[in-house]
Length: 244
Figure 1: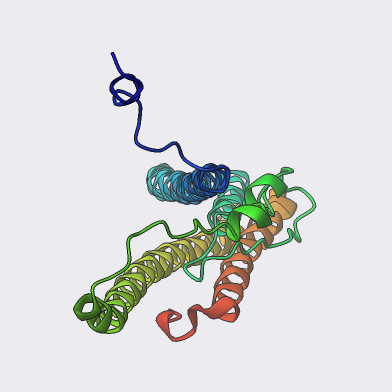
Figure 2: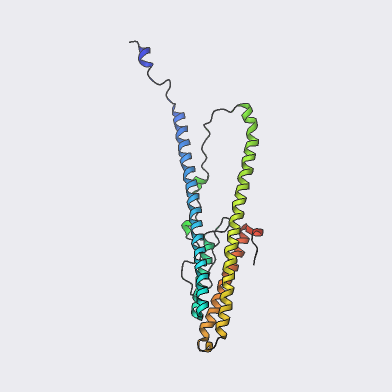
């Protein structure tokens, strides 16, 4: 058997050191980009979940108030619902508005439970800089001249489609935010009216402080809604919001 025959079974050429390093760098960058996308999806999913929970809480409070009004709500019950409403609105805001940034609202109610304000630091933290900047080096074959001529137009079309989809998603989320805040404000005003009626009911003088606390809690809840809406507008949602 000749030497040529023996070598014929070996690979035609082994990758050079520079080629191996280039491939390793490409693999590393691809992994970093995948990690970034996973992190972004995770944060988006968490924000949606927090908003969904806040919406469920709002619906539960509306149903609770309706039941209590049929039986005759006491000022203390009204105050409790108002405080829970303020907490739900703050939780919704901490998930981030449709502008894409968190909108923590400091509590002005000393009786509010801790943790109703800003989102946890780890949720608001930006992704590591090296992930944001990671770009996989191109290992594609040289383009055909005809394909190269079409590439700028295709990229422009793709960018336009992506921007249209992004704006549509943002508009839909802004509408959801507006609906949530509108419902929350409506409930706060119902609580204010109920607190006023409770303060004027027979025997209310015996529990004047409770009626006063109920009105103050309802005022606080409506103020929280106003603060959150104002912060979302300031963050860039702007004309997508309509106050009611």
